[in-house]
Amino acid sequence: MVTLNLKGMYEERELLLDEAKHINAKAQREGRELTASEATRIDEILDVEIPPLSKGIERQNKLDHAIAGPNYQPFISNSDVDDCDGLVLARRPIDTDDDDRSTSRVQSATAKPTQWMNKETGKPIRVMVRGDKLHKPTDREPLSLGRFMAAKISGNWKYAQREMQAAQKEGDNSLGGVLVPSELSRILIDKARERSVMSRLGMLAIPMENETLRIARISSDPTISMVGENETIPESEVKFDSVLFTARKSACIVPTSREVNDDAVNFAQILEETMINAMATDMDRQMLIGSLGTEMTGLVENANINETGSIGAIANDDIHDAVIAVMGRNEMPTGYCAAAEIIGDLLKEKASTAGSYLGPSPLVAPLQREHTEHLTTANALIGDFSKCAMGIRTQVEVATDEGGTYFQKYQRAFRIVVRWDFAVLRADAFQRLAGITT
Image (cartoon, rainbow, N blue to C red; front, top):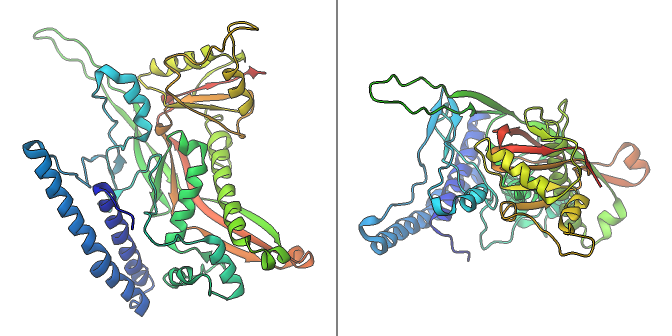
């Protein structure tokens, strides 16, 4: 049994309530009564799974209160919320540790932003940082995409009993795809995010309940002025604009040999790994180098991001200077990424041919460093990656095809579809290095 802390219990209870509401809403949309299995699942959530969590939350709050005494501040699951003209708006975190300001700001990529709220529905919007998961671990064995697909194809659910139970709560897409059970969809997205360079650097992830999600962002900061006694305080305007996340289709097809599909004992595991890697790879590629059109606009192609060009042979000082440039715009980078060859050039930089390795400056050393296959050796990116976000629909769709050329080659093709979008929330938080040579 996995023991959850107070925050984990709140989040687990919220996920269970969301599942119950999703089941009920699905029946309402279809204009029908709940099926027996749907009614049973809702009763199970409300009568069996939620009460122990509520009791655990109450017990932990009492214990924390007894330990902390009069200074106790209870955990608030729905914290301070701002809004602007019906848009979702998150407050920027405030650094409180003046003695260690740089370290606290570097770590801000893993800090929770103030909760966001959808003003139209009144529901909180979950904003996930590195390490957060859509799916909460339990003592049960996780669902498997490989087992689900293998059973769906063969009709034999003997080794996929939990996947079968989860599938009965969902349904087939009217377009012919198979809607992956919600729990399994969350697991797949979590695994893809774990392998994403952008997620490891601190990018936010926002689950989307609908096709679109609009959030507000600050496009210019206010100006603070010093004024004397009886002098007029000059006006300063904070400018807001908005970002509209629109769920766009990202898909891939994986052809496989039917002999391998039917005979290999580890095929289910290999299929799942292949699909997850494909999802993570495509997400990183589009967020880094996407070129608009049917793709996202990646950080390399974003015209609003400041650039330092004609770098030539890269040195650690170039990364340091980029950090200073971002700091000059009242932001603090949390990490940087480049091609593996460029990271290697930085790590092997020496004071002389036979000298010692120089290494990064004290300002750069705490930053998260990642290499990626998607950036060419000509570019590197430095910034606060919590100032960009992906909005993602939490329902994954898969389908199979054995016709056409797949039939002629005795193959079976698997297709996976994920719908998501990407946006930069604060362009000034990034600096792009260009014109790097090796």
